[in-house]
Length: 406
Image: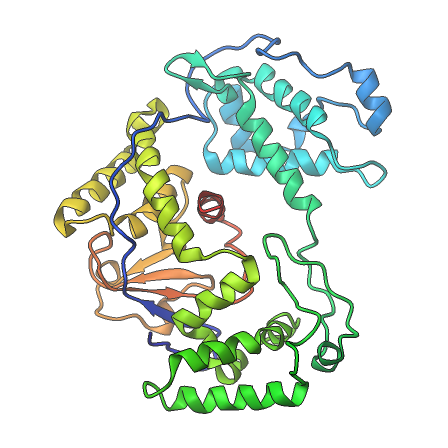
């Protein structure tokens, strides 16, 4: 796989030309988290949580209190008009609620409190929030906001995502470093010791040998390279976890980190997941259900841009003759659903009206570069930047995909 490093910019395309496996659609029943006009009583199928006085005494907070005055004006306008809020506005609402509940003097809100808050949300604005499918209320009617609130609390209650002091190579070699808490989703964020028999000096020798081997590509022993990259994983993590880590330095010192096979191996060690297998499984099992939901769910049917994108994706299946367009199509469809700018994630030479990409075309976040027609391209590459967060203005799509492949 060919890697391009642009001087003066932390931009590194990683070419990948193999499509995901084609797979047949599986039969299932779609579930919905949003719908249109409906109403709900205060008793929403399950008993509302225990009384305000008991919850307040236990947690130091008044339960069921939603800070509506802090919500975005666009959200409140939709709610007051009895309309379903856009997914992006709903996504903004959840952190505001949890932040208001997260008081320094009290523990994080428990599910019992979050259930009361969810019931208040749906009870006050049923037309905007009640879970409904085909005119029938689903479950309690407030499972969707409850799930979003619980997920948000789970995320902020995990290890801090802020950078902290990481071990030096000397500390790793001696085993004296205190192990940093793994970041959310990682099982091996920073090993505290080197492999048996390895020292800082031997790691440096391996690093230099890997650089020499990379310069002599493609005449190299791939098996030997993967073993050497595995043996130097702890040292790689030390470099990547430094607060002043510069990607161009990583490209120079650890070029094989940008090789497809070595990158996937590093990811598996970091997260504990074979990401290619996981993505293929998720696409096989979940994409057909999701597309069926988007074609049938009433609010989705009213989204013209979304329906046009779904139709273009299905037409691309016929043109290409397999399901490979769903790789790019998934992002295009989700951007239409969440109301986000697809160009934050995917750029195509067709849209840019040029045969190749230049550094100036690239955004400051990870994105896919498509060569040719967006949904029919067989050649595409990943523009990947280490240790960057999702774009602040359009992170809903990436968060959804992250949960999709779990």
